[in-house]
Length: 83
Length: 447
Image (cartoon, rainbow over all chains, first blue to last red; front, side, top):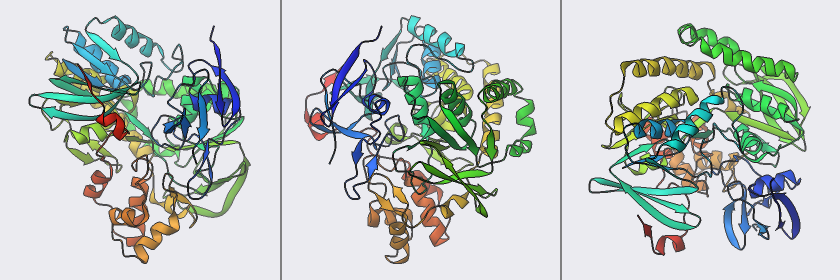
């Protein structure tokens, strides 16, 4: 039986199964836009899914440029879109 | 000790083979579970001949001389006298490991081509859709177009359909008639027909109709443009149609990750399809002593070939005898791999699909027009100079996504073919994975 955990994304509570990546949890909760780009302010989401492209980077507990496709979500984690 | 880098088919086969005579093996992988990108799974591997995965997982887990170091991202490697040191980050802590011998089996990732809208949410690689489904249990969308070229589109489309998605279309830009160019490869790999039958049955079950000679050329607001293309990938005018989809998963074969072998000075060459790969001898030994390379990094060939190359590398590194039959088997699989390259080429015509406003470098948000201007206005004569002017390829991914495409766009404007030297230079990077200066300067945990 997998445990359900809760983390926040830009302040919104997101529930997911323990062991899921941040990106998987967000896509599953219909949060497709993970960040806006620095120059064009364009929405970006998961692209390569395996940690190569860095399009899905988010701020995790204050640490920037974390690949949400690789990092497991943990209970109480604070995830934010980068600027 | 032998360090095996990567726990996909090639790395697992290498570790298992090396452990047969009791050699100490450290199997290092970035994932929490073994299997690599090919056997991605949450609990149990499913799909075509998944029993092969179960067998090798069991052997590797049971081998007492294999230590599996998971969730470790190797960011560099260096020689120290007769030893090779591998530096990695695990849970934010920098560690390193030294050994006399290294087997590199770092695999490959999806090759992508730019098109208008490929950078908007909903557009992704088939590998991303697959990894979210198999590795995470998450379906990326409800109405999905799977497109690009190559046999990998089949497991992706059928897997997504099986999980409940509607596959709006399965689109390959190449014609299946291209297989007629490789009769010998087909005849010597008859078993591949059963794989085709396996997918054909699934496609019929989920009513997935394949389309050939077409490509996704734009994607915006849930609508994809499907253009008819000829064998050179040039768009046939007046033959495009719009399809509604919330996800387009588009991939054009695979690119091997050469970073670590490149850092260690292993010689590379350009394969028949323009992909940069490592030079290896018949025992999978690279140009560098004590470093063997197996799997996609020595030429894209799929899991079957990777398993055999891994086994050969593992036997060679541990000083065991390699049976002639294994080498013959590799020749047979390589013949099939070459047929795959012939059957699913990526032709230059894609450069006409992009508009002036198409993003080429996703990280630095460089548009096609900026690259064009760097050549025609600023006088860049090769992709390296163009990259310096535009910052294309200088973002977080270190050009892994766009480097090859930038080279080919610049070559299209200058009318000078991309040289092998340029291809090799564009495939190498000084650091294999990102590491912060803080982590670099903190104390090391050595073992």
